[in-house]
Image 1: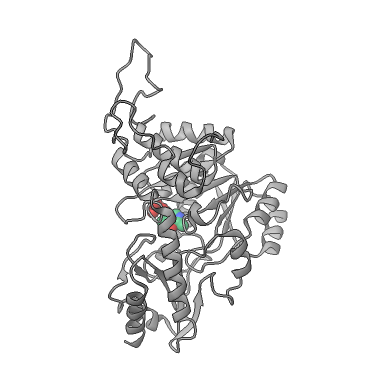
Image 2: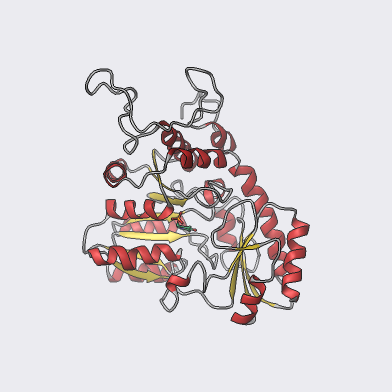
Length: 385
Ligand SMILES: *Cc1c(COP(=O)(O)O)cnc(C)c1O
């Protein structure tokens, strides 16, 4: 970013990075480029490096420029899904025999990718409570891993990990420190500035923001790693298509205002649930009683839009999840509409019975941007069923 660039603040970058008006027509919204191939001015005479749609596409470049600017990274790569991004990163960074130290309540698909896909290619996996620095130190000392993989806030229990502290532990052991920033988004938390090496996103969630596009991204300032990721993005080809890239770019332009509203609504829902007679425990980092409250206050600019709640039994949790009316019972999160999810049988069914399993009493709410009064009324009626 040049010092003369007028877009420097986060909300300005979200709207403008990678979005210069079209050079030829002045179209304020750059066109979506569907072409799979590019005319060459003589053999090998590429215009702006574009050759073939898997290796590069201007709409994808625009999204990658936007993502790099928002996370404060030198390089960003966009993929067909969050898991495709993760797979590409893991293959770029690891060799058979290498080990990943993983948080114990990461996204179920991340655990499954490591345990059931990369595991058969010789990648080893250990699980630890990443929010417990002593446990992480002990695990790293017992055997130094190649990657420390953290999600903060975690899914679905909203544990908060000290990214700067974890980066120091990881770097002392020579490990790459990876943060899945899907829940917080760069609007609320900037892991690279806190010392992480790579940021991972499921852009399907808040970045896209409208539950209409699946995608993923990697952002890093490590040039050598970026070269390996770029090669695999091209050589394996799990890239985002032009329309997916465009929808994601369009979603990101409103990220800052959406995250503000998601956070305000989630705080209202968490406060309502906290102390309700049917509720055993509320998991929301914005609540003063949350064990990660103070750390989250330092590391995040707001507390985000996800609230999890423990009811008195698995049966009560299932009943609540099936009784909301404005909150739609569905997987995923981060869209403008409120969703309710029962992790044990839905998003986290793949980790049932493993060390990453989610208690049966837990319900996760992705609090949308509707009117807060309507959301509270819906939660109240569902708890009364
Ligand atoms: C959804 C999700 C993923 C996986 O992303 P997909 O786009 O579904 O492949 C990874 N991490 C987190 C935290 C997620 O919520």
